[in-house]
Length: 252
Ligand code: BTN
Image (cartoon, rainbow, N blue to C red; front, side, top):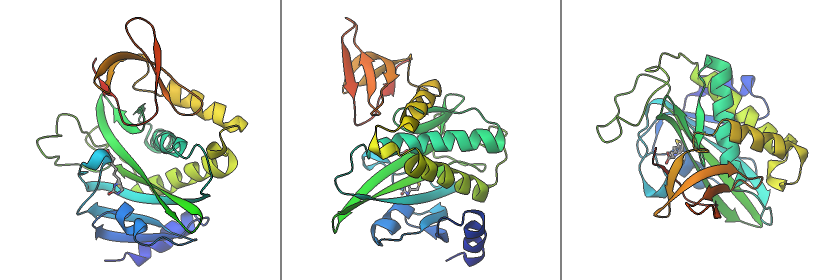
């Protein structure tokens, strides 16, 4: 069901964007991917029936906020993967401002509080008619959550951690921050001065940097995030490698 009153409130709070809001939907990313157009709304749902995570996993989608933010680029645009990292930073900053919870970002873009995941991000792209539409899909565990057994020891909600937050305000704040990273800081062009500031924040708020991790089946120490968003990993002998895709597992 469409939530027209909620759409009106969100447009009023964030007039630079259009919003389409549902009580439940299969997946906000899937919805936008099926409705590609030059001027797409942000899709928001209270619940997803088939929420999707990275690497083909499902994403538990009850009791939180689930939304997808579209960005249209020229197909030649570089550094689109950096949007993935910027989305994590936008979430972490918005949560800090709206409910004073200090979260960390597990590279590339899971948001952690107290060692447990409170938010997942799935960026997908669709190429059509000479443009690429990148859809930044974000799911945040805001309300009290009855997580399934297989994730209950690793997942956490803001409510369960003692933080109350207004979901609509949170979505608007994140959308605005992401828009500012893309259109003012020009993160997708890679060489603007704003990129350095964002990368420095990503390193400061990183849950991964400084930890032992496994990546592609090998053990490393995560050293830093570079300007292009790559995670630099040092092996036992000090040799450095760049992780640019996939995810790392934290060993300790
Ligand atoms: C992950 O943790 O692996 C990524 C989870 C991404 C979930 C969000 S919720 C909104 C959007 N719609 C989806 O189906 N997935 C993303």
